[in-house]
Amino acid sequence: MIVVDEKRCRGCGLCASICHEQCIVLQGGDDDMAAWIVHELCSTCTQCIAICPQQAVSWDGVPPVAYDITRLPSASQLDELFKQRRTIRRFRPKKLHRALVEEIVNYGIHAPTNNYALRAVLVDDPLTIDSFDAIMMRAVARLYGLFFRSEWVFRILRTLTPAVDPKLRVKMKRALERGRSYETPPAAMVFVVGDRRIPLSEASAHYALYTMILFAQARGLGSRIQSAGPMSLDRSRDARRSLGLHRREHILGTLELGWPAVRFKNKVDGKSMSMQWIERRLDD
Image (cartoon, rainbow, N blue to C red; front, side, top):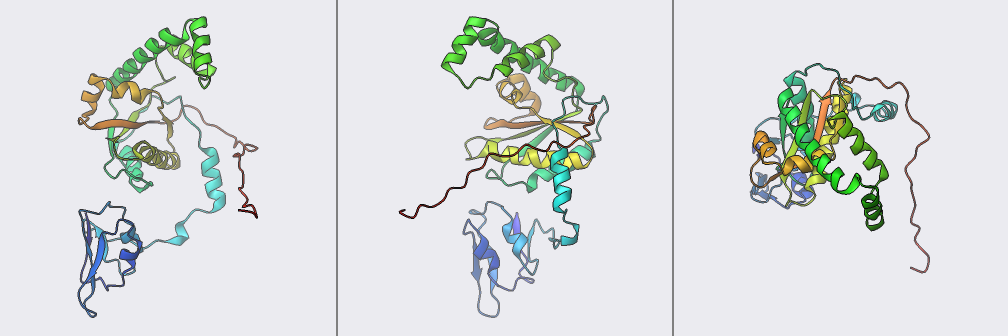
């Protein structure tokens, strides 16, 4: 909960002016003006904590710490970090310390979000990870058998749904031949779960996951977002029971973590985002 230390507060109103939920009001006279938070309206975005010059606003009484701009990474350092990030599909058979996983996951709280009730469920038990993979592979086998095994059925599917990528067929066949969805199992899996009825919940979950990915990379770990599996796991009673999901909770995103078994050496330059500027016409 966000709280205001009335002894520190000077009533400057910066927190109220930046609050997009309009849940902060100023109360008192000219000499004892102080901020007051209407918690029923508060979304806990914490912008009020970040802007207060008196450090009078805090989370559960934990005092904020001023930014140290000397520790910010340079543009060249960020260039190195972003261009070194690669999806890891092969992990070393080495266990992760839970404290390290928790440190990585906790950085997800600093990502942009529209769902403030997200939570992370962490799994590092190899047998549980294998059981989840078996559930995902059963779903892959059913889907492949229905739409991808038969050449003529696949052609009809491509005609009806042109967006279906032919590479998906190859990937599914390879996974079935391999007998698992990953080339080598991760040491840990992170499931971000929450209520889908809240707008932009899945986007919020993936913001959190990508923040975790970058910090994991800085700590020397590899990662992969499991894109297809969450749907089958979310529909599985056994998986939901293992993860302890509540009735309204759904798997919004899944991250695999581990020590990478492969080290990439080169940055990939030459790729660029397609861009288009929209110019205002004079007759508009």
